[in-house]
Every structure is written in structure tokens, then in C-alpha cells.
Length: 129
Image (cartoon, rainbow, N blue to C red; front, side):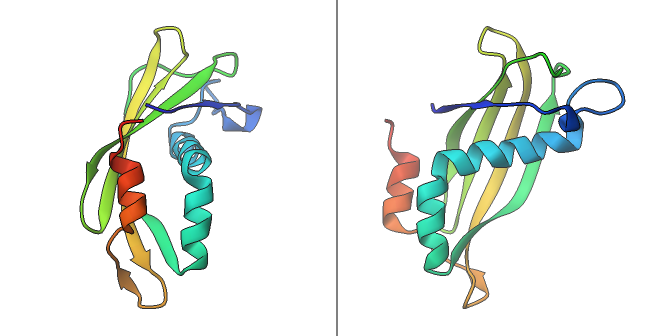
């Protein structure tokens, strides 16, 4: 399972001094794009986008500016036009902050409708490297 280290910024915090709940989704996006950036960019030039169709997060512990934040990402389901990514947000030392999930849909922008996942991207998602 790939792990992405995320640098937190003061602007990520809310009035209570911890990472704002809405900011978590932006951090998930940062981790997801870092992991798949080359592939997303290549497919985007071909008119294929990956859109968030659904997102959820279960908050377990507050994240402060002083905390190390690591996000593990694992594909948990791969369908014909969509895939689901599971996330585990933790400090790299046993403290888990949250668990999350996004459903991503492959979207053919010129056609204006969902499209089948490209075979090589499907393989990337289903390989156990």
C-alpha cells in the first residue's frame, strides 16, 4: 500500500487548532494526485478525467500542526467505469487520525459521459505491487 507524507500548513487549521474537517478532503486529493499524477495527466490530455463521485471520512483523532501526517492509499474496488480508493490517515507511528474513501469515475470529457477505465490503468489499480 503506497504511503504519502503530507506537509501541513497553518492555513489547514481551524479555530480549535487542528486540521479542519473540510481540509481533510483536500489532503486526500493531494495524496491521490501525488500517487497517480503522471497517469492522470496523460489521460487528461486524451480527454479522460477522474471525478470524485462520492467521498466519506470517519474522523478518529484531531490532527494538529505539530503532527506528522501520512496517508496510505489502497484501491478497494475496481469497476468498469469507476474505482474506490481507501485511505488511512496516521502519524507513521501507530496513531490513526481518520479513515476515508473516495469513489472515482472515469469521465470522457468530449463525450460528456462516463467511460470505461483504460486497461493499463485498471491493471495499475489491481496490481499488488
